[in-house]
Length: 190
Image (tube, rainbow, N blue to C red; front, top):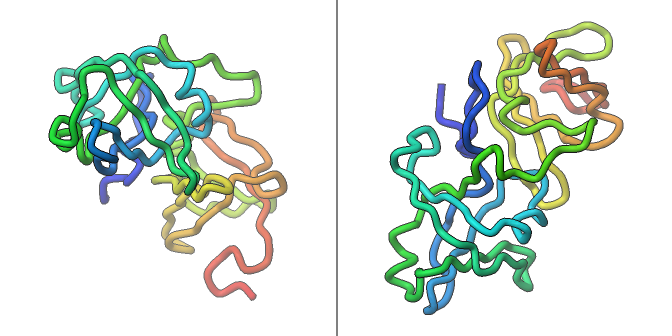
C-alpha cells in the first residue's frame, strides 16, 4: 500500500501526536514556511504556541519543538507560518517536506460530533443500502471541503466528499463510516 500523502496512517493505538500540516517550501527571505494543512480545523493553528516539526510523523525522536510566531492565510488562501529561530530562507529550507505536528494533549478539544482524522483512517465505508465500498486510506483537502479516499476490491478507488448529505455517520468505536451515494459517485455510475 502506498504512503498516504497526508502523513496520517491507520493505527490501533491512539497516537501521541497529531499531524497538522506538511511543509511544502520556504516562503520569502525571512524564514517563512508555506504549508499544506491536513487538519479539518486550520484556524486553530493560530491558537497554538508550540509546534513540533519532523521528517517522519511516526518517529517522535525526529521531532524538534518550535514556538509558533505566526500562522496566517495569504492572498491565495494558502497557509504561511513563521517559527521562532527560523530567520532566513536557508533556515527554512531544511524543513521542506517535513511534517508540522502537535502533541495530542495540546490539541484543541473536539466537540461531541467531531473526530480526529487518525480515527477515520482505516474505517470500513458502508452505504446506507448495505454495500461495502472499502476502507479509508487517505484524504484530500480541497479548500472547499475534505475528500476521503476509499480503496476497495469491488469499486477500486472512490472519493467521498466530507459534506452534509454524503456522510451520514462516522463511528470509530464500531469501525465504520456510513455514506449516502449520489449518482456518479461510483465508477461506472451515470
